[in-house]
Length: 222
Image (cartoon, rainbow, N blue to C red):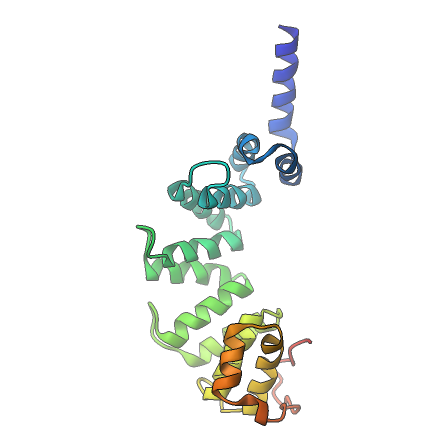
């Protein structure tokens, strides 16, 4: 009886006093399955990190059966609380034709939510929607602006997309030298998008644009 009471008190304290970081450490030592009840308690406290992490557990089926429905519910809840990664992954879920959630408009809106919070991956994704006219009308200028915002955060994929915009003259005046600058780092890192733009427009033959005359953008960091 005493042992039972001690165990119950320990569990009570663990569930209601531990932080997300501490439960993550518990998971490393004891496994995902044993950590799930603790994550669920943190979810009740509106811990968005716990919501997102538990959602990824359900998506991956790590030590448990996959459950996309539960994952979606958690991502929606975290997204409503402005957790950018959750909004982004929720958008990716809506993009997947492998689920019954496939909905381009909802995907776009979910990406926009995170993009409005200056989340670089989402800004880059919304830019791609605008370039290709997916779920919305094409808007090259707005796409360039979003790629720029993500690029300033050193998001390589956005720099590759900017390279394409400058090389093709979509939303900006064509500038192969500037396209060279934006594609160079990604190409060196092996980014497929940057490599394709580099090769398709033969950017190697154009010298880097070192003017950077416009004040709306700062040269990307190396």
